[in-house]
Image 1 (cartoon, helix red, strand yellow):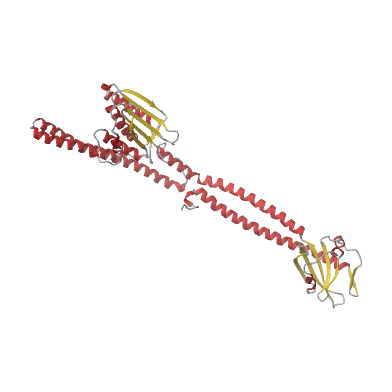
Image 2 (cartoon, helix red, strand yellow):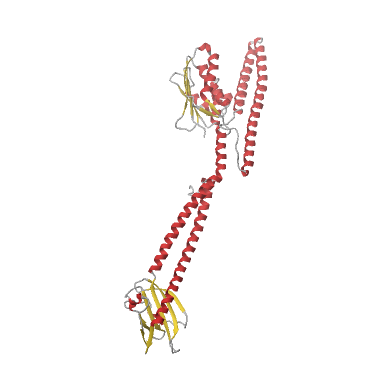
Length: 464
């Protein structure tokens, strides 16, 4: 089962952006909650401060006679006189409950009338939030006093509708989260561009490494930050070391090839001289030895050709124009096989590029084109083109009008790693080497029958 989340799929910039975004939203979220709570508390404290003077308004205008309260003058706050104005006044006593209510509260019913029976100490204020009978929210401030006779205690209460306060809180909350959201988006954009600028040397290094891989560059160049200079220097050293090592391997194996071929050539020459001066039986035995010597020579040639492959398709590759390499090989073959008067038909795309070592490409072209000239009768067709459906893809087709390769041998001659001493004479060795080189570049090769009558070799280089 494939995991839904895989951290390896995210770039370093994406990881940092996600981490900072989570941190930013947590910080701004807590900030918003704290500011919202602080503003709410401030509004409620402001409501208590607002109601306190209204208590004094009632106290300054009220008179009492035989337990009945009346006002000597109109109240300074008109809303006490307006029915259902949202501001209500009460006078109560803990033992008797409600004693008086303002004209505005004639139709008003408290959800819990027992709050008017609570005893409040002299000089003590009690602020609370409460609900009305219809479910509305109200703020209530009660204040305890000792009447002039020094005996009776009363509670003066003012109740006000909290809707305007909560509307103010709602407006503040909307404004707060809108601003915090805008700040979050702005900070994310700034953070994105800062991280992009800060990580740009890594992106530049990745692009330079890609250019080195495709052969557009030889090493990492340019100015890098101090933290990356050690990495770039070590990578350049590694690249240079690899190239020197490849060159050393090629030189060593080339020397080995000459060292092995020379003794084989001397032995072949001696056998040839002995064969000319020997009897039929000895000549037959020398012929068998000569056949085995030829097989040894093929094996050495085949294995050494495999060993010196550069395998540069995925690392430190160069760009080689395929058309130019094909023309160079064809010019040489036209001279070698001039006596055959081969009619050559070419369709070469100058834009076709091989990403790898030129010697590997020449090795492939040399084997395939030489087979076409060697076994073709009068006609050879060569096509090189860039594949539009594959990035950096190149297709090479070579056809001849010779006897071709038998169908039962077409798959065998392309088997990578097939033993050289079991391959068919001639084309088998060359195509096996070609197959190994193409496989090392992630390419494809196929052998078919040509409309010209001979073999049709199709090669596709498709580097990744």
